[in-house]
Length: 276
Ligand code: SAH
Image: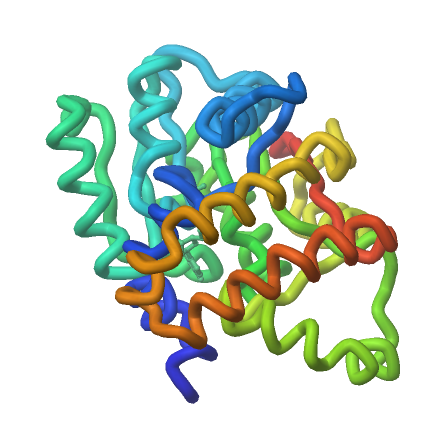
């Protein structure tokens, strides 16, 4: 397996560069107003997910694919919940622990290395499962959703946001777009996008009942213009961290992704499901 095919190595390597490109949150923005900054919009997405998933005081939340810990700290500070963040990236977990200490919320959040497709956490131990832009990195989404169901308490909720396919992609089209997908692959890691309908099928097979499926492609679209600006204003620092190739793959991705959005091939989805 080359380093790009291994999400652990990939995330360790790019985490610092991404802070320049994406900010402190490793996810898209949800733009409510045209002049929202990227920081406001990425916070908006966290808020939208929290509200959709009825995250509230005293609840225990599992954050699957916790990045460098910002969403987990946000949930603990703003919503008063107890959060366990998991990630396959040792550097991400280390970074997230430091962050929680600096923000003074380490009594309410903890981070540990675990795989979302086989997390080894006890059955029925969380009120909410939170999956923010990590599912596309997990090849076995059926296993991810089964694990989400297993660790939820009865009537607990899973809330998930991610980049999704709007329609199935025939192999001929994948081959025709090979160059575009290569850029995306090197910029964002070994990803596998699926349609919201497929997520729904896997969730239902796992014993979850979908209560909300929302297409938020339009509200996330302005993210690309912000990323483009961040690449240009931080190009030297990013080049120093991920090299010329890394910079070029990200730059190209900022052109390719909006095209795929406009062609209604890729988009962004939010889903909420309840454990039966
Ligand atoms: N949710 C965070 C980070 C999103 S980036 C945020 O919004 O800021 C994707 C995250 O998923 C990274 O932390 C990466 O290490 C993690 N990840 C990738 N594959 C994973 C897996 N199989 N299990 C758990 N985490 C995974």
